[in-house]
Length: 124
Image 1: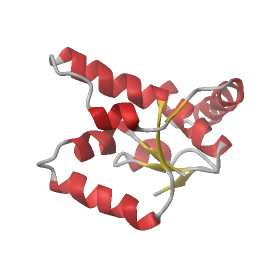
Image 2: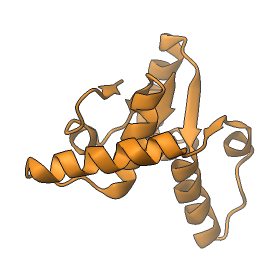
Image 3: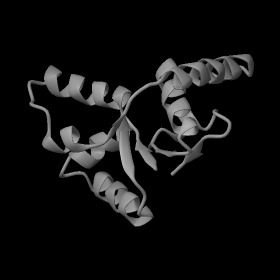
Image 4: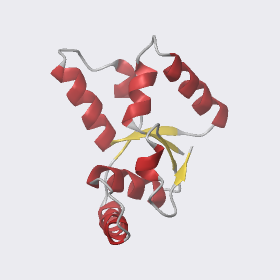
């Protein structure tokens, strides 16, 4: 399973983006299931509404992972571990990392430095 982060999703949805085209090919070559999280959905839909655009059909059709109790427990632990090591981890990134770890999924992001701080997290 691959969880697509918001930055990658924005590029993919921009039909004129070569970076998005390359990202889409990379995803397709894995043959793995592709999902987004409810957190990513929020960010994308917020941006669409903010700029007066409607929800894109592809977004509505993507499988969206919910944030569970187990995710909350792990994300709190991950955030604190980073804090104790002197690494700044955003709460949102901690939450996405926990969702991926709990599901043995990889995160596909262009912001690798945001996610490399989490132990046991696989990146695409």
